[in-house]
Amino acid sequence: MSFLPLIIIFGVMYFLMIRPQQKKMKLQRALIESVKAGDEVVLNSGIFGVVSEVEGDVIWLEVAGDLELKVFKGAIDQRFNPPAEATESEIPEEDSPIE
Image (tube, rainbow, N blue to C red):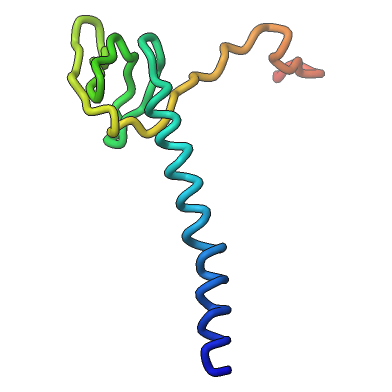
């Protein structure tokens, strides 16, 4: 009976800490494997760029004009989708002008 609390604590830790981390790692691996040319990504270091070419575990990342970086695929943190430009119909109108 003295092992029962220990087993319960281990079970709680598994479901609160280990399992969510495994899910996150699985999603990250899927993201890295699905990267293709033309995707906008953010690296772990905070560098933004567009993937210009994928060569196995290495990608070529265009960061500015003619500047391309050769980067390990594992350095990709997330895809970057810039917010869409607001159109005139989406901009709220004011009831009265400021005088």
